[in-house]
Amino acid sequence: MKNIKKFFVYVGTPRAKNSNTLRYISNLLSEIKICMGDENLKINIFHPQNSFINKCLGCERCFFEGRCFQDKKDDMGVIKKEMLSSDIIIFASPIYFVNVSGDMKIFLDRISNLAHLLPLRGKAGICILSSCGNGVHHTLDYMNTVMSFLGLYVIDKYNVSHYTEEQLDKNPDYMKDKISESATKIIECLKKSSSRSNETLEIIYKNLKNYIENSKELNKNEYKYWKNNNMLDFKTYEQLISKKTNKNLWNLK
Image (cartoon, rainbow, N blue to C red; front, side, top):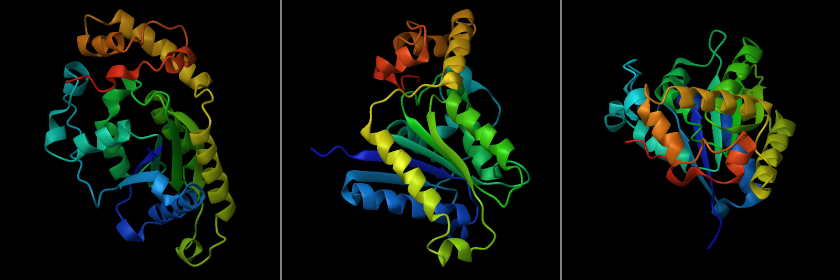
């Protein structure tokens, strides 16, 4: 049986086929397909034009009950399942007024409760932004933090600097080096079983573990998730992911 590698991509663009961000993602994935073979990959790309996500209502039921009641009313339940079953996670967004797009923020708000669970632990992530320079460093730091709180080991994060659509469509050399570099990082990550921990993830794990242990009466669902997945049994995040404790990765109901 072939070892199919799954990619989950969410692109927070409202521009559909006219999106520079989506164009770049397509170029990157094409490069990976050439290197790995199309038959060895399964790629799921979600964006506002092929999926519908309701806005977060701020009810906090996802934190205290372990589920969002809206998941059955839109596509978020399917999106979460695809994300959790994938090997590589890519979040991509244009930058609008010094931050991610509104569509990207809606997506992130709907998975905000996962920031207490590290559900993507052991997986690799990539953050890609599209901007001429407005708010790049701030937004890259924000997205790196978001992805780390999900448990992702971020192997690459960068901005696609563009000035005209022709640079992506008609100039095959535009960003060619960066596409090749990023594709190489992804392929090497999939081939190797090296540690997927870093200083940021170690700090997050330590702080979250302390929070979960000291708030188990307040939030029993989150404590149950950590307990059932043996996530309280380790001193470091690297120890946690090396033991592959995600036997009940999505056990909140």
